[in-house]
Amino acid sequence: MAFDIKKLLQSVVAHGASDLHLVSRTEPQIRLDGVLKAINLPELTGEDIEEMCYSLITEKQKKHFEENGELDFALLLPNIGRFRANYYKTLGDMAAAFRIIPIDVPALDDLGAPAIYKKLIQREKGLILVTGPTGSGKSTTLAAMLNEINLTENKHIVTVEDPVEFIHQNKKCVFSHRGVGEDTKSFSVALKYAMRQDPDIILIGEMRDKETIEAALTAAETGHLVFGTLHTSSAPGTINRIIDVFTGDEQPQIRAMISTSLVAVIAQALLPKLGGGRVAASEILITNHAISNLIREDKVHQIYSQMQLGQGDTGMQTQTQALLKFLKDGKISRDIALQYANKPEELAKAAVY
Image (cartoon, rainbow, N blue to C red; front, top):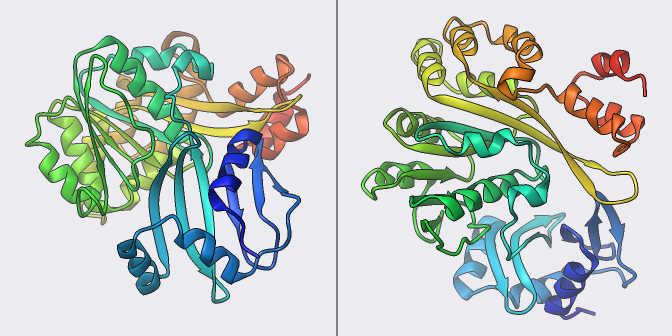
């Protein structure tokens, strides 16, 4: 038997969960503090899920899903919340994943973000990347950064997302939110035309292909502050990922563009916190003269040692240092720190707590 999907989503929000999963042959599952937990409800069939999920979409969306087997969209339920939804197929049955998007945009202070973030967003131009795996809080961090700008500066901010997640109320800034598939055909097309929309700041929901990355770098070079995301787990790894999208003969030019336009890379992971909740461990790379030279000269492998050296003065930090601070403050367990560490051997040697 199908349930009332709106009541189910309302319950998910009330539990403080981040996600709801509907998959046939199992009961509905929620993700709470990063861990999947079953809701005490009967197992679902594919027909149950189809009945529930089709009640939330238009005929056009239904047709798109039936033709492609995939559907991404944002959903606003009055008095309940806003959600990012993905419909897909598994073993012939319909399935769905819902991510809860807070209606109230968080402040950087609410997130306990490092102080350097407020300095980074004061830049007039350049590229700031927030990276990490799915569910690592990239969108939330970016939304908090844009919220800070919205409170303090008069700017035109164009966001391009698939789908649009956080919706900002115009305070000092004017926001033009553009959803891929609804308001524009693709990220690369939106970026091409964004230059004619007199933007000060551009947010790219995902830098997923060569054309989008190239357009982002060009926008950053030509006097705009550009924010973007990638699914990479370390700051130096992010630079390599961008370069590797291009062919060998294109890479010298791309390295030169990155070396002049990259402002910072924030690679974050959300870790379960002792006592409940989660904390964001952030590796922070900030481009200075030495980092720029290493990028341009194809010596990205040496960037990590520069990050270890430049922390007190620059605001840079490695993930290991972020994890060590959480351990010292009693926020996470040693086992969790080692589980999430990019360099567990380095952490194990340094962790004496």
